[in-house]
Image (cartoon, rainbow, N blue to C red):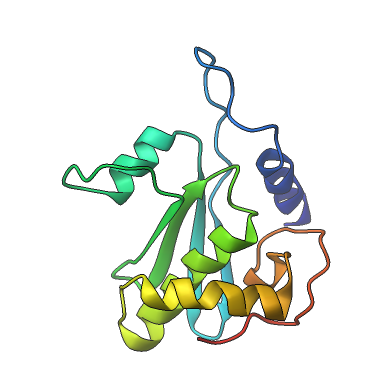
Length: 147
């Protein structure tokens, strides 16, 4: 388990997107975390922005997204973010908050996730370790705050 987390962290802390014309790196395997009781999140690190945009915006909506989250029928919240943004606390906390809001309130809107990010940063600092993601940065909380 530690080895897989180390490999995931190594892949996620790369130097950004490859130059045009070069193949994208293979994304790491999904990582499952449970930052809150009863909330299981399956994190997917994507390497193709166009694919993430199409995945997150079915029906042809335009614009780039940083991530997307939805609740699967099995009760697992599936999150997709670009691999170079997964360890960004603002993005990870935002997507995790979607999962918590859907789980607790059946609320699929942006408002709870947007309101959650400043509370997360104030409580936990810049570490995403409280969300169950690999991060050596020190966290200032033992667990992520509730909504």
